[in-house]
Length: 348
Image 1 (cartoon, rainbow, N blue to C red):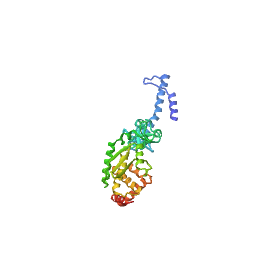
Image 2 (cartoon, rainbow, N blue to C red):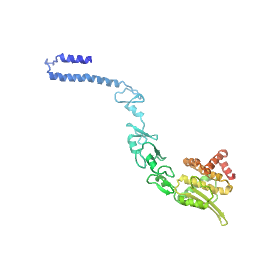
Image 3 (cartoon, rainbow, N blue to C red):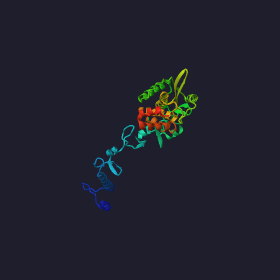
Image 4 (cartoon, helix red, strand yellow):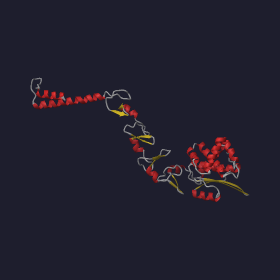
């Protein structure tokens, strides 16, 4: 401040003389005053810039002469700061303009606005949402609005397929579900091969392999096996064997609309019953009979890599199917696979 006062005083009372010895007029004197005054003020700004240039980047160790960033108490130059930012999971670019993290995935601002949307209604994902195994995302509003798909458990959306009896499939599951006899025959061949690999050889020919809607299947089940146990999860299929003086008949009925893995589990289970007719006691307790068939289906699911379906079978709380499966798993742990099969031939 003293420097400024001294400067003003000197300027006001000192004569201004040109190289020719002429004295400036008042207007020129005022203009020159403001010009010198602005230079005086700018001296402080230049000092501040010089002070900023003394900062050192925590990344590269170089002095920072321009724009810099602070992160977790450290100072970075612009180039080093870019390397502290994540890359977008969609486009792969560095998220310079901010980013969003959703379900452990990081999106840049542009990709978030473009891709982080519900695959049913198209709205931006906010709050809770579901992500399917194939990467589809569902907002909470659609989760509340639409029923679950019977096969994958995700919202069916407006284009879901209604199978009746409150059964619905999302478009993705409906496109690969088992609906035809030709598809079911392929599942059957796969099941026969899987059982053979375990040492369970089907010698009794299945005379009839039929796929049915739920209403027809349940009517056939109750008419054919009215005294047998109905599992808590509903009837997904059943095996029927009859014998009289005219011969015998071995038949398998399967619910339509099942995923491939579910259909394979059902057919493997029912094929095991065909094997049991020739290899196990006829008066075997239901928990052992169904438990062993469920164990075979469980092993097939594991052998095929269908771990989700295997875990679903294992988590069943049904007192016959679930408990019987867990019993056979303990038998396998003690005797091994071959020992468990031999055990199933004898136990009553």
